[in-house]
Image (cartoon, rainbow over all chains, first blue to last red; front, side, top):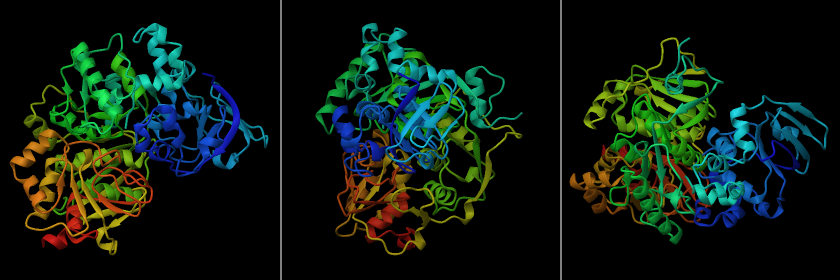
Length: 186
Length: 415
């Protein structure tokens, strides 16, 4: 996975919980169909509008709630990364472990507007709003965390380490396959 | 420099002299618990795992299977357990909600690290364990490697003062704290103080469980004589507790006067800054009343419900659902007559499962309905329709509400 991403941003608010992104009824579906229900009530129709490479920007306490693998659904939709003013730590870990770049940026929802183009580089902590020319930097994440994201998440890493059949290594970089392999949580 | 409970456990398990907020540490995990949902998709059988004696599998979220997808997971779990010689396999019939099974079987030990694929794993913080829920990919990874990493968060200390009144439960303590202080995102919670001895173990578990609802990382209680007696009863030995140092550094220290508390209720949506005493709520009708979950499906919760319901009847038009937290709780509650009392009053007792709490099966609520629940979450849509309203309260309050048909302080029913 790339640690530097550029894409169109979608801006959401505070306290978006896991059940608003991955409702229980969608847990009965296969991942591609489940992914059609991300933000199903918060912003109906969004999954038809979002395009591969887009970036989700959210406010405070992003992802409070369940351990269910919401990050894998964002991967399924082709979302390139998550930016939030504050992440719930379980949700943040799920992003890292799914190889989905995630950056904590205070005031993110004031610095970006729906439709802006944003660039976020986890390797040095810099960010830029390419539409408004605003820019800055945040503390760089530890190498230990950046390495997991760069390797595409923990499942490809486990294949590389011999815990899973080696031939699955590349396949597991496909998020939806990795998700089917690790199963689901709650 | 002194350490909090979590910092102390991390230091031990990372082989470090000291750990401070902001550090990133790699720790050995003492027990890893998988749940049924992990097997319901295309489970990949690993080539090898770290240690079968440090692994448990609990069938809880979707049992008995409500969908074909879930039904397909059971055989995968059984094959995996057999192939790798995993003795701690809690299959349907000796199952329960994972956090209850963890407690009943001594899987959470003081001063140790516990990981499980459910966000309410912080429940085991009641036993002085550094326990937390992690995503399925990470738990899978820990199963293979035996370790994981944590970014050490600052800790909020709750000093419990005074004695907890008999009519007030751990649920009420938590709902009060959540109403007063709101979220604790990227913070640990630590509970102790002179009033701790008056808080029974089942109430501590309710409080620890719900740390997830205020977005906390770990939610951990100090060890004391009450915990020691609980562990002795369960045959848990050979552990090393982790108390905080007197000079530990906290993000904040907050005092809670237990003696001044009364039954609380949270309004729909969130528990943060959204609760109030039941006595201040006003008349609020209910369609469904639910007692269950890892937070409040314990034997003591069923006893409290049975005491309120005995000789009374559920109001016309109201459904009361009661889900014991485990098969062991179910059997003991049956032996003691609690289930009889609940059923005689018109309540429905279900098998043990996470079902209704996460809106998956066994009691989903419909549009326009109002549910009062003693479970873990009151998010919009959590228990079914996004057009349903979910209030959260203690088992006593839920049982009393089922009798009257509106959210009711149990003291007014049993007085």
